[in-house]
Image 1 (tube, rainbow, N blue to C red):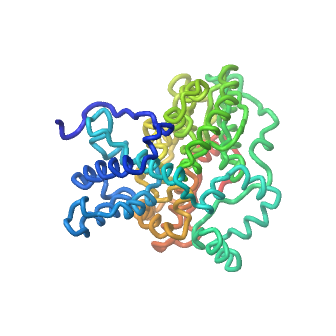
Image 2: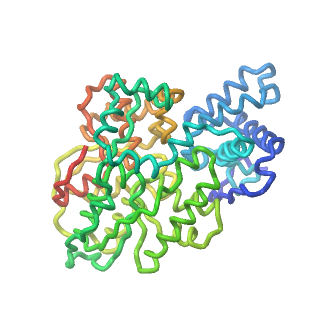
Image 3: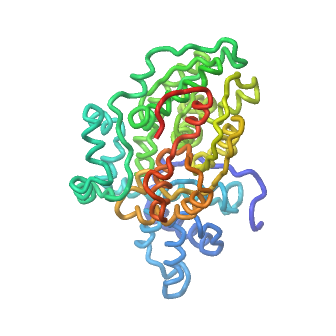
Length: 447
């Protein structure tokens, strides 16, 4: 038996339709097998709060071993997992093909799915994960919703905390009254002299880009048009990541198969699919194919790219078009967990280094946010604690613009910086594509 695997990690399909997957006795046995290995290793002590919780359970138990930890206490470990995949990809020496066969995030997913199968669901979590429904309700009254969700609103935020469990201090995404799809109906002028002219991209708007921050897609379209690339903006529906966090695998599979069948129509017309948000790109590339054998899902996975990944690709293959202007700025770039989980390298940094005279400093560590998890009253303080090293590093770099491909991570980092003494408004956060778009003369808005 080897201590660790030197082979490239692989990931097994999630066997969620097997009756054994939700058998509570078999689940408990697997939890104990994995937790015992984790307890003996402890490489993941400085990742999410799942591991400190697990190790504290063991250390505080009667025997100091897992055998005296009550199985009901495992739920606290599961509830602290954000499905960031960092343990699997950056720390664990026992992932497949190692014989120990550890996949901690998917074990947490199995536990959540088993909970649902046996009748335990979070009503609030269920409602918050209905992204398209919630957006359709909020979009017509976006100014009112945005007023009500401001952290400074002492009237509505305590009520939200009590009713929905969203911490009154947690920043939540704003809604836009006009979606990205609506704002992208008219074609842009394509630079026909650009080296990459003839390339075609279908931008998967994602729920965040479509409903919350259309400028993310508009900035991306601007950069691609300047480089001769035809773009279409499409949004068949949410990728289902919030549902996955709830363990609602059947809903994720239904969404995956529906969205994939729509997006593969664009692939058949010669388009590459670009997901605007790393979590959504990760779902399309990696998570969906592990949940279903539908051919459209697997075809889509092979033709999906991240924003910065694609721009770096065309820069290397063709070269970028002329017209990039120096910005004379210093920026800090946070590489989000789900950017790292795609295993494509630090593409946001590579992209920004294509801009002349841009001073780029990188932070590669978890922001602590974890999607809707980090907004909840039970987790917000923990999320800030997990993200504190990132906030401290950003303060040390002292660059006014703190960039992250994950928009929720960016806002969360700013909140962490303010907790450490930064003045509100002293720093701002954007997606790295904004910087590239501005270097190409884009006059759109940024936060």
